[in-house]
Image (cartoon, rainbow, N blue to C red; front, top):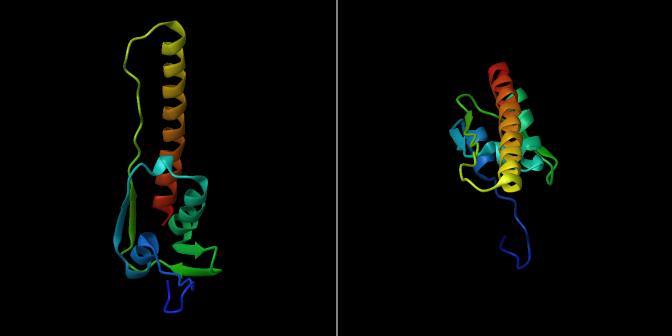
Length: 113
């Protein structure tokens, strides 16, 4: 909030601050991030530019900026019978495919930078 009641003042978040100041940033479970977040991170990784849609501005990543992400794959372990076990296996396989595709994109984008 600004000094005027009801006024909104934009403050750069953690990602913007890290990019602008050339800091390192670690994002956990980045493969589970919403599409909107991934869409904002893609140009940052690929071209070193963070676009802020609500403001119509962009910020260039400073020298030294690094973005690291962890990917967590959940693998079901429990017993259970037929249908439940098959559903868990299908869910696990889908999560592993998604994580694998994300890793390929993340590594490719990181190498380009």
